[in-house]
Image (cartoon, rainbow over all chains, first blue to last red; front, side):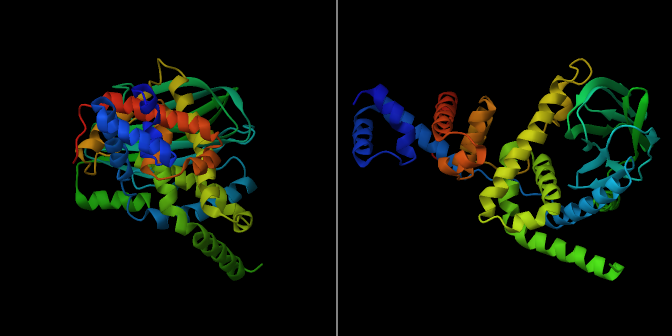
Length: 224
Length: 182
């Protein structure tokens, strides 16, 4: 068998999906051809390394939290559908804060002030996920994110107001905002969604502190 | 319905849901991590799936083979919500919303120890397109067969096999001189 043909069978060989006859031919060829043998060994090492590639563990209490949140969110969603236009919040992973906003028909103008308080400690990046569950696809929606002076959005330097125009598709739209603290003290993150002169606002209070194990644990409790 | 009965009924629903899905949580989390390459996003994706499924408990209880059903649902959710959203964010307004707004500059494996070969290969896999990387991760790392993946990803086996082989060969070309027996 020629090298080209052998090399085209190496993947099937390491997956053990070749017929006995073909496997033997590949095996015999690799015993006499250093180049093909090297390629075979390389593929074998590659597959072996991936086979044992670990998955980093989920955060503490993930399983318990994920079930509790599913139940809690379902109830909250039911409440929201009974009272459209309100806001609600939920927290998921320890390092992620998520807000969910139901846009409905966008036929009301409301400003909500959520109670979620985000504690940022030291140099960590806190990812705020704003989930917008829109009943309809919406074009030309203005999104604005405003940060207090002691916060930064990673990648945007000193910019405290970021705005852009986008479309929202029907269903869940998620924006990830990696927030870093730059000066101690209280602050806030405001997300505004504007359409046809109407606006919905979500506000998260923040507190940026220096590393302190007790406070850090407190922030986790807040998220849990 | 009295408040006590309502409370009990809610708890029973929660218990039934947890009992049904709990055996697959680790599978779902691993699968989500292979898709998202981020522990935070993997947790978020699983959370989103469970939140969507919770109100559909009765339908869920009728599913005969839950593991492939759940992984397929997770993948569909990844495609519908997560991946599309990531793309949308990247193209919303390049001057205002750079791509790095959705990245925290973290490597997915920064907190765990990898062998030399694993480090070399995971770095090389960043050069693959997403389709190749996905099938390599799910087949070689997660252990799904091509038949299972064809069902989960709703893609013909031949296409998956081609992506797998091309991905591996590309990684081999990129890493050949750096791999050795650990």
